[in-house]
Amino acid sequence: MQKTLNKSVTFQGHGLHTGEMVKIICHPAPIDSGIRFQRIDLEEKTIIEANIQNISETNRRTVLKKNQVSIETVEHLLAAIYALGISNLIIQANGPEIPILDGSAYTFYTLLEKTGIKTQYKNRKQFKCNQQFKVELKEENAKIEFYPSDGLEIEVKIDYKSNVLLPQKIVLKDFNDFKDKISPARTFCFLHELDELVKLGLIKGSTIDTGVVFVEKDTNINTLGSIRELIEKGSKVVKKGIFNDRKNAISNEQAKHKLIDLIGDLSLAGFELKGKIIASKPGHYINSLFTKKLIKMSKEIKKVEYPKPIMTKDKIKQILPHREPFLFIDEILELGDSYVTGLKYVKKTEYYFKGHFPGSPIMPGVLQLEAMAQTGGILALNSVPDPENYLTYFMKIDKVKFKQKVEPNCTLIFKLHLISPIRRGICHMKGEAYVDDKIVSEAELMAKIVKEKI
Image (cartoon, one colour):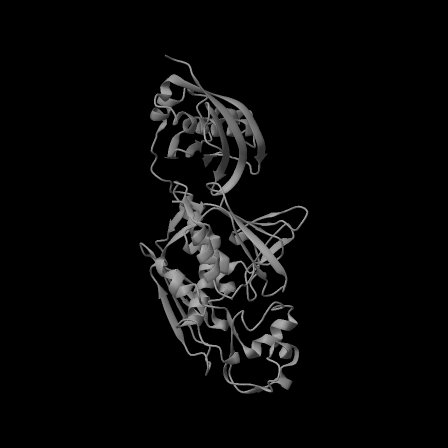
């Protein structure tokens, strides 16, 4: 089932790479809205969807960008959101980066959990891949393999050929273990990497409390260049081991942190995954390649497979008064108290293609809206015990957008959900039409349910 928060929750802290103090507020969001970020410090307040298409950088963190507006270091928060099963959220930020906090996902997870999670009673998108595949970066000795499975199991292995950070392995089979056994794992790096990160304009908000730094040999601070200011005052030598004599928070902490990063990046697929993943030395770039591969495979399957309908056209005719040639819905795939999903097979023999347009047939936008409205009629009439005695009259259609052409021989999927509860027979809905997971049109619709028969 889809889930969101019961109420809003706030986090505040410095960004690891920008160094800016940022406050973020996670707000509940409607069914099918997904995870979205919004930069409220900017005039346009751009919405940035948490999807793989919006990834712009993967160097030491995941950056999402849309219309020249970006939000950085989203992976730890996204991992906590995914582990909690939250699928709809709007995350407002008054700065360019999600706070690093203690470098782990623990605070995000615990506060989101404490705020309370609300079930929205509509199925969450799932993808069960039945094909084995792998993504590999040989020059980095990195590889992610996928194997079919009925659940989600993730194994992470790391080996940096280091004398202070030995090989580690972790397997996550149950997300109930995420909070205590995985989420406290902090971000990490090697001392010899820090100078290059500073030169790249990163880690401006780094302190000794934001992660774990491994030192592979005793090092004189005079050789450390731009990172000397990070070293404790009075020290002349950085000793081999973990910088500042810090201890690992949990066993296999570094493999577990790579698991957090991987889960956060996988969440950008936008669905709940079924399968077994074995990741060797994962990082944000290979994680993004793997996620893109999963999305591509899911779309190839979705083009030919749809859920078994809960209503066929004969059943639809028992509820709606429409008849051919003005009945535009062939099947109902999902129906709940607050949502409905309908399907129309757009055939090349549709009567309107003869005149709209000859030689370049396109389904008229007004007919897309009519089909959407008919799907919404099923949702509206589902609120009364005897729908055959009622009609729905549409009062208003707002915020209409047509985004893609709808051509012959495709399948239109209509998804509608209530914007507010039905009161006094007034039904206010948000609707979206899809072809192959791409939105082709959308609108807000308001209808009145009227009893016509006694």
